[in-house]
Length: 239
Image (cartoon, rainbow, N blue to C red):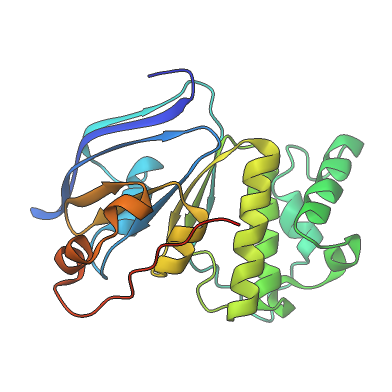
């Protein structure tokens, strides 16, 4: 593992009840870089993230850099609208001493709220009354509280409108740049992959392709991945 690599995965295999979820998956992630995971429904994308988090049994090798902090933002975070918990109380669950919160934690929380474009005013609001976009920003701020070296994002803009989606991904990119953190994200949107990721994994129960999006996301590979059809193949370049 070189000095910039924070994750190496070799020959990863996961099965449930004797049925293969995916096999022969190998890749690496470097500090400050974004890796996207794409593939059809049932390809094993979310299970791959869960394997990286140690939440499902696997064969093969997952090697994290020692001491790396990992944060995860789920695809959906269901909250009962009547749930009696405020945003502030939700964040205090992250504090080591929620009954006696330190000034350091309060200042860190204020900083992370500001970094996701929110103010202290939202702290008294019930979590169940947040809009989809507000909730995702709160989850990103929550994920940033432990100073992660990498963020794992499972379709973090699912159910959010196009404007809100761009806001969330622009936010993640800014945090990635400012804090030099790595990002692994699952997305169904190739435009998002081209715009935000330096590497992409094409997964369909095995590794179909892996590399820079501009090189590997060609019509041939996309046809292999999604089983034929017409695809919008886009070469996006930063301005």
